[in-house]
Image (cartoon, rainbow, N blue to C red):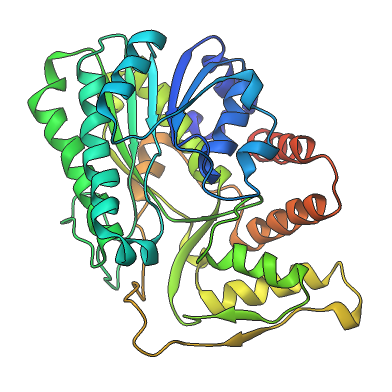
Length: 364
């Protein structure tokens, strides 16, 4: 099945033309990029999400809201979610909605568990009650155990902080629904754990690249809390493409449903300090000497625990789909800087997104 990894854009996205696709969390960072891809592919897209979590936000900039059905709703609101399923009858469902910030999970653990665990119960139940769904993917997290080796799909789920633990619970909920309910149904169900995604249009707080962009634009020093933490950084288009590949493949062959890790190669698992070095290098290439940015180490004493070492073993998805990462971390940072420069100059954001999507998919 190695040819799957070499699908060019037209071959993969042609599948989604006229398909009814429901995306939870469509107003978030990943969701906005995914909505742009699907709308451009000609899919009939429904989004179900809270209002965009930041101002500004990528969903508003991506010029997709008037080209899809955007429903503002809370994933915890089961009845509202069921109404949307009944009305739109989706064939393909991808679950991105979550409380995604580790530090916020310490501030509001109950909300984090309600959203990430019971929200998953609600979406799994909606899929169970709607036989129109043929392909369902739940996106979870790499933040489970801090082991020295790449975390594999068949190893125990855990998670120190409420965010990480709640996403592990989300995956276990999905496993239970697969075992208890979906076996006798036509629907194919997978989960996918992605690494730390970066890219243009992420305006979230307490994420390193958005912090870098904000500081650089203000000509301020970049504050780095955990410069020695290792993360599997990847451009946002990397996991989005493999999500689309999984959904298509299992739609056509249920045997391909499973549990998949989606992360970069080992060389792109780098420390936060190294990532910020790359950002400064790429940003400063566009600046004059007096405008160059730098970063300073502001490690916090008694800060909330965040995993020091995270890494995924992605050999399974490479074997099953012939997949391999397209852009390394240096290219991912370069594309993020490119997008950010377009944004700060007030230029055409949708065009920039489409050019990056086209380059990523067609040169894969």
